[in-house]
Length: 122
Image (cartoon, rainbow, N blue to C red; front, side, top):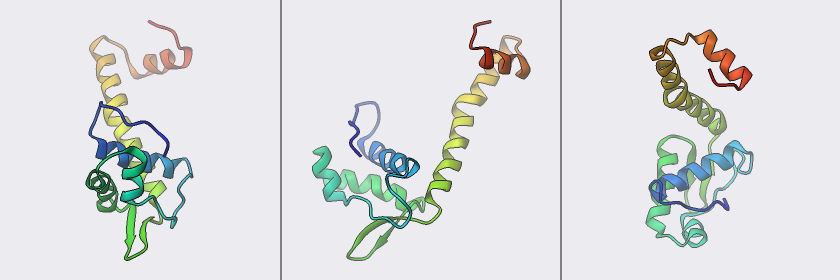
């Protein structure tokens, strides 16, 4: 979690995404403790409430769970759940739009695949 926060989106969303990315990269493993909100606040020089908001998003999604008095931990199956959600988001945000644009200029799926594989412009 040594990434730099940007102005592009809310800090709490960036905190949640950084934790997710660490889970995907196996930096944080299932049943492993994640940094506390105070640790995150100190690391990124942010308000602990902001860090907590990012962590709580992941708790609400079932990616993290709380052990009372000990801290937050990565849930079993968290990596698979994150991968599944991100694949769906990738399709919705990129592939679907790509295919819609391709259709609007008369390109079929096969032509799009050929363009991707060749790396060339039409």
